[in-house]
Image 1 (cartoon, rainbow, N blue to C red):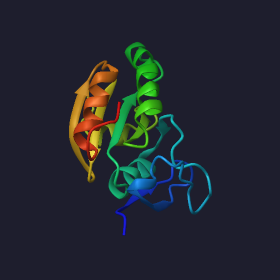
Image 2: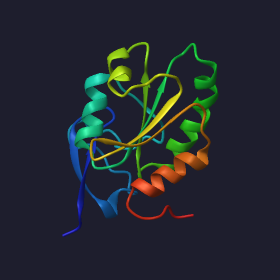
Image 3: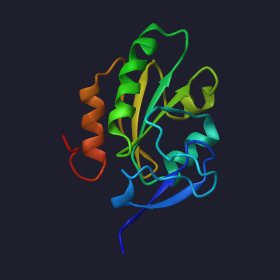
Length: 150
């Protein structure tokens, strides 16, 4: 039997079992029937964020940001491009630190943008400030299973 991964739906937060070999086949949520991968970052609040990080089997790449932050606005298109090109190898999420200060404090966010990689519910990498697509791609290669196809 093919290895199944737990994928948290970006729409209803339902947990789905998807065979690893079927990740690229546009899987749908078994609960709400929406696409499990949208090719765009998912905006999450505290409880939803923790569900994706703790219950999903994919690495989660998180951008902690704020609307008033110029570097955060500069980072947004890079992060969107990463989500569009690197899903379904990882889940890309955005957390507004003004709307979720407790979540920012929980992970020790001091400056924004702050990027985190989570695997198995734990922080495995972090960086403050702007990043390029190469860094995000490197994190996905490092924390997902196997290299990214060209």
